[in-house]
Image (tube, rainbow, N blue to C red; front, side, top):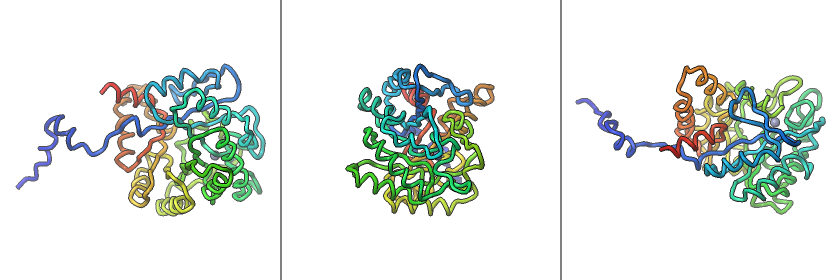
Length: 322
Ligand SMILES: [Zn+2]
């Protein structure tokens, strides 16, 4: 007897009925780069369609996000002044804090998440305080606590620490609990690899390290079991959502987390993944829209509940057409 699996693929009607995974606008978080200053609307060359905005120029972008019903944005701040500790990150009037207040006031329905790290704010571009040419973990945790409390006071809805410091989730949870923010959730960049796919982001956020690389804190792309260890610690320390970054080359890790943790799983569809599709589509070598939809669907199928993506607006438009 032949097993005729093709029976359930015969028409669009039956394909719809048996479709296992769907991408919806509810899954999406749109990253935004907000630069301190005025009259800034700079296209990022390696990320066509994505811009850095100053706050006075960002309303059109936010109007569009709200109109497309994208539920959330993830903010990255680009300050005018940097120093060796990234002290602007805990300035209550810093660019990130201003951005949070501006968006929550003018777009109250939009869920605002802040990236919590130091690399856009340090003169050396690393994710914390430097000692002996490496990031000093525990000294960085002290500043991390100051940063999240400052974001919380500005009115952020969720914080997303991305620096891969040991103990960062416990530090942040305690800092928020002790300052009257026990209900503020944490989305941890729990399994973040030291990846070449971040290249275009560093142009966007002005955060390339001036010496060395991030391999003493971000994970080795060869490792899978270690991802489980990282996620286990963040789960125990109180992370509400666990993230895998990047997404497309790490679908196995997304599935590992989905199978092993009773928490929502997020993935970050990073700048290099975006740039590759954009570049190939521009050359006419692939159907950009279909490849975009297929790659994001693969993240859902792998187990992601939430996808952070520069494609969010385009995906929302495609979904509206259907
Ligand atoms: Zn960083």
